[in-house]
Each structure stands twice: as C-alpha cells, then as structure tokens.
Length: 318
Image (cartoon, helix red, strand yellow):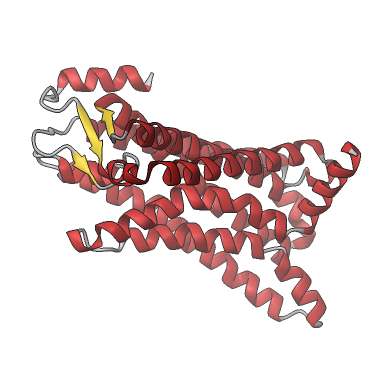
C-alpha cells in the first residue's frame, strides 16, 4: 500500500529528476567494512534476541500479564521494527560500499521509521500514566487501568503512528528534489529530506514541527507531569524502604525515557549547520539503534519480575 502510494506520488509530482538518494554515512564507514559490519550485526542480533525474549516472557509468564508488561511488550515490538527498518539496509550498504537507496525505498523507510517513533512516544507516555495510577491511585488501579483501557492506549499508539507517518511521508514525497540527493545519515528521515528539496517546504516544515510538538513535546510534558506527582507521593511515604521499593518500579521506565527523549531533544535542538552534522548523526544512531538494543537489558537488569521470569525459564530448560 505504502509502495503504491509513493509510486503514484512520483508520477504526480516532478520527481523524475531524482530517482535515488545517497546516505553518505554508509559510504564513509564502508572504509572500515569488517569492523562496522560486525558492530551493526552484533547490535541487530542483540536487539532482536533481547526484545523477542521480552515479548516471549510476557506472553509465557502469567505473573507478567499486567498493564505495565503489556505496554512493555508493545514497546519491544516497536524496537524490533526500528532495527528491522534501519540496520539491514546499513549492513547491505556497508557490504556494497555504497549508501545509494531508491526514492521509493527511502520514503518507505521514512514511513515506517516515523510510525515507530510516534508509537514509541505514545507508549512511553502510556507507561508513565500506568505508573502514576499504580502509585498515586493504588486502590483504583484495576478499575482505571483495565484491559480495555490498555487496549485503547495501544490502539491509539499504533493508529497515531500510522496517521502521522502517512501524512508526513506523502507530503514530503511530493516535494521537488532537483539538486543534491545526499544526506549525512545512515537511514532516511523526514527532516533531512525536507532540507534537500528545491521547492517550497512550508507545509512540510509545519507538519514536521506539529508532529514533533504533539508526539514529542506534549508527551514528554505528560511524562514529566506524571513523575512529578509520583515523586510527591513517594516523598510522603513514611519509611525509606517503602520509598525505595516504590521508586524501583519506575527506574527502568525513567532510564528508557531519559535515553530516548534525551537523544531526540538533543538532536532536534541542534542548529542545522554543517558543524553539527557529525554530532547530529551520532545522536540519531543512539536513539534509532542503541536505545532499542539497551531497552531489554535495562528492563532485565532493573526489574526483579523480569529477572525472575527469565530464571524460571532457564530452570525449566535445564
């Protein structure tokens, strides 16, 4: 469906001047082909194995059939999609020694990448709301965060991702690209593509800003607001042990939020001049490949329920 829409977009617009884009970062690292290929392959395998294991554990272990782990399994699936969108093409380009990617291939990557980024922001916000209700409204937790509510949160996350990515991808794909077709990236993203266009990008810029505001800034503010109430509730607890035990249920989520939103905020606040391109590239790799790899490690090391489920699984196999 996405492929057909993009092909129609090419025919409708004056897109025949550019039939492919060049991801310069892949060309740069191809000089260190064995090392770079090995690093990205290890990251890809660790991400796939780690996040698949989280999904498997949540489905298999009845004690993990709770809202928090329902959202975590959805988040792990998003991370699987992230790396499946970006790293295989990086591995292929590294072997080939070229960062060339077709017009349709580039915008297909943009579509699914934007979808995953939007869904992840929504899921992280949903997890913050879950922690708020669990700590600040514990007696009404099962009523407020019911299975139906969890399903609504998940549907909203994925549906908002589909709508946001469809609108941004189609509008950007209809821009004219008649000049440079090179971007200093390992994968295709909306903003670098907008910068390459030789036509009026006002609508695309507005949509990109609106997307970042709604799904980035507003959800981050919601998370911060939730944790401000959580912190206040924790500080009111009488004993240090109860405060520590309650806060420990939030540490994994807080760590993931800091990594993900920290990288996003840092990257989009950078000036768009050439001096920041390498830093921009490094940060984009952190939130698109390193964060998906680290998430299952963070939740495994800092969550006793996940560790217990993993230990039980290992004992059963032996």
